Image (cartoon, rainbow, N blue to C red):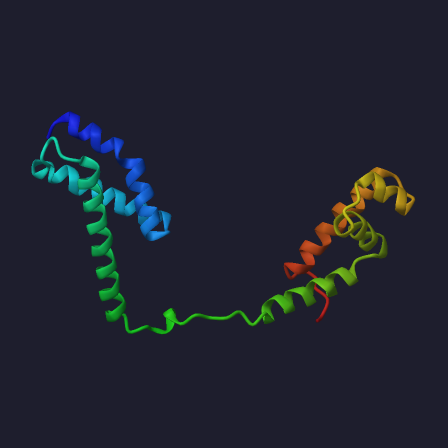
Length: 165
């Protein structure tokens, strides 16, 4: 194989990837098809007739790789009898509701000043300075309250001293 043909095939890569993306609409599969196309083109370089259209030749190889992949996938899906792991599962949302309920219980168990600090800073999005002004305390005190409230919430939600649901 000549180095010139190798360089010309490399120059075809962006065009081949664009064609593959158009066929598959899947980046991963498109990259696999381009890789297979280049592999086949390089391994069968002796079949390429110099002076003919290299782009058409590599496009044909890509197209054939794509159809081979489609045939392969249809055979595999016919053989797949669908085990229990293939059944789509819908999330009922129960776990999220329980987690939210746990959070509300833990949040309610916080001391009033800690609940207020978390509400002002985390829920309302106020800066520490604005929250300190609203709570009529120093900025350092607000930072300390928020930090302690977060730590206490984390401990309660991790199972340390969680109030009953």
